Amino acid sequence: MLSAAEAAPTPDRKVRVCIDPEVAKKRAILLAQLDQAKLDDSRDTVADVRLSGPEPKTTARTDAVVEALEAFDSEVLKALVTLKFTRMEGDKWALLTSAHPMRFDNAIDRSYGYNYDAVTTLAARQTGVRLDDDGEHPLTEDQWTRMLKILSGHDVEAIRDAVWTLNEYEPQKHVEALVKGFGAA
Image (cartoon, rainbow, N blue to C red):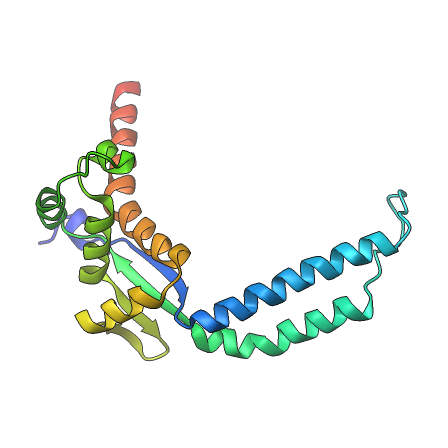
């Protein structure tokens, strides 16, 4: 018979990343244009300080950028991929962290005692799968290598953060809560 811990589902985290750098660039440009159009619109309207005053009006330039963004949504959706990462078994996480010692010139590494970048990236490759309507699909080493090369720094950090949270932060917080609960009793 399985214990409650053995029967519980393995914790996981999902991350959406953009696998087409050109789509990400184009969307960033459109968002910047929208911000500029809204700023221009706010300069063109007289402020109404009443709480029940009229909503700010948009202009043709703002509406045009909004329409361009909406038309671009289908391209963005094609470029987004959802990845799911699961918590590693404790002994595998410990072996991974001990195999990649900290870099002494890196504050994050000194804080955790291992090479954060190497450990979280390798753990992502070991536990990550691509999700779609058909289910979960493991990625080959070659697919991981190609994907990590084209992802933005933000997306790579989102992956590393998800892996670190699953394997380091959440277990640590769980133990702290148990200790706190035991001490309060």
